[in-house]
Image 1 (cartoon, rainbow, N blue to C red):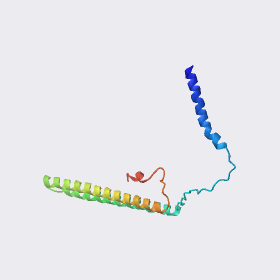
Image 2 (tube, rainbow, N blue to C red):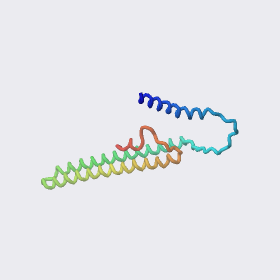
Image 3 (cartoon, helix red, strand yellow):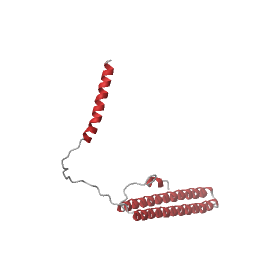
Image 4 (spheres, rainbow, N blue to C red):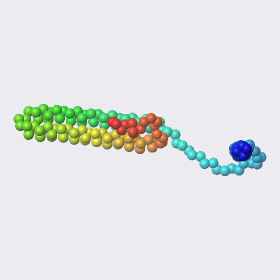
Length: 153
């Protein structure tokens, strides 16, 4: 019995509190509204041609970086191939072992350098893009992508 009374009282209180703003909004006044300054935020329009050019510049730089990376890897493979073939032609085991080790170390170093150069070029392309994007008034992000999408390049 007491639970029903408390529940009914709380329900009535919530309905009253919920209906109060609606009742206040429906009241009208016949007085002349005073002029108050309205703050408006003017949003500059996005310069579409500018952002399209920035995208072209970014993606062209990424494409060039991939080409440079592929060339560096191919050169590393070719150098390794020649070094290993030459190592097998050596007459002593000790000299062959040293030549094998040097060939593989040089190959790994060439790959490391190529990856670092690719990463630097990728970061530079995206940095330039973000800078250009600001000047195009295109501050919001691109859905479903961004710099993280190119992280595995």
